[in-house]
Length: 116
Image (cartoon, rainbow, N blue to C red; front, side, top):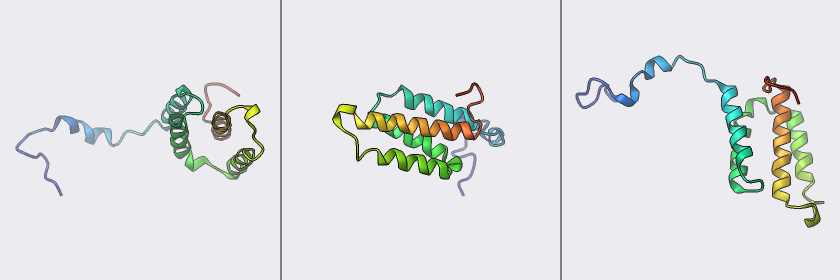
């Protein structure tokens, strides 16, 4: 175990108040909504947007149910019939993922500020 305080310092500025903050709950919904906003701010079809959607899906993991899996399989199944005339697959796939994740959020009452 690392002794505290180290180096003869009485306080470590980065840790000041950390003990008090440990007991504060995490505002989970704010994290999810912030990640959603960040994902939607990225260019559609971009790798960065895909990474943000992956992060959002990770945050929503405890709420992913069988309906999510069914919707995700249906979305992935559309790739086989996709043609260039319909547009960019990556953009369409990411829009589909956003819709599926919004449905998960709605089912779990995470869209409390409005209705869809």
